[in-house]
Image (cartoon, rainbow, N blue to C red; front, side):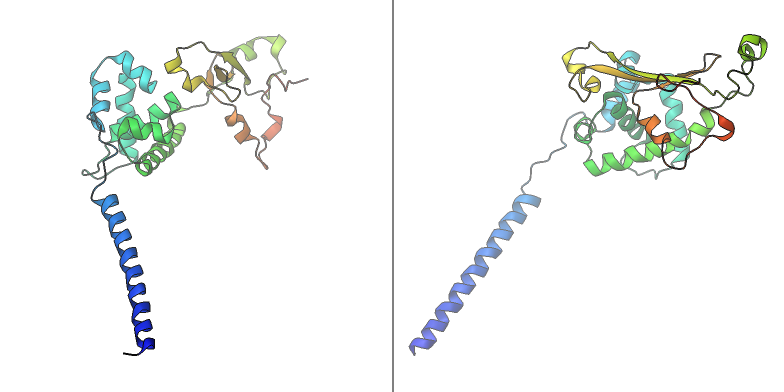
Amino acid sequence: MSEDSVAQLEDVSDEDEDVVRELGFFAGYHGHTYFDKQHYHNSILTRSDWVAELVEGNPTRMFRSYRMTKPVFRPFCAALDNADRQTPWSPVSVEDKAAIFLYSIAKNASNSDLQERFQHSGETIHRHFYRVFDVACNMASTYLVQPATSSQLLQNEPQYAGQFDQCRLVFNRMHIPAYVHSEKAKPFRERTGKLSQNVFAACTFVVEWGSQNHVAIRSDTQCPGLSTDGGAYVPSKRSRKS
């Protein structure tokens, strides 16, 4: 055999070794990833068990976790089920979906926090949170009703006549310092690092009021093209009717 033939065989042998080495690497990676992996969401109290424990347990414990009482939680789940029907074999029950949504806004929990608490993947948490969010927003037209008549105070008191004809309500906002235990501090942590409760409240003359814990709601109303008809206005601490 000539020297050229021997050199060609050695080159082919080196290439084969590289291919075998790469195949072995990918085979080992695939086996470690899909056959020898350790389960991540393997808590003993998985999925519906923790939700059922709260629903059937002490009402104060449930309120602290969901910021919702038992008499309200059950109708909320029923309304959610009617608005967002799911297949009977769905791995996430309507109670689980409601709990994911309520726990997130009550505790200011991140997606990773919800994964650990409810033992679901991040994609599952994300998908069901926004499904409940859409249904909850659509409930506004049913449960949030504007007063049918004008305030009796404005109608019967001459001193107010004409002064507040176009005024819809008044609102204000402020950070109220919060003093809580360290294990409960996360929902109260503001961007400066201090603990406070950000309150955004509105009130009418007949003491019909509502509140929100973040001024982003007001920011959403200040989008381009939004206007109020007939000169209506909403005074605040920084915007008063002269």
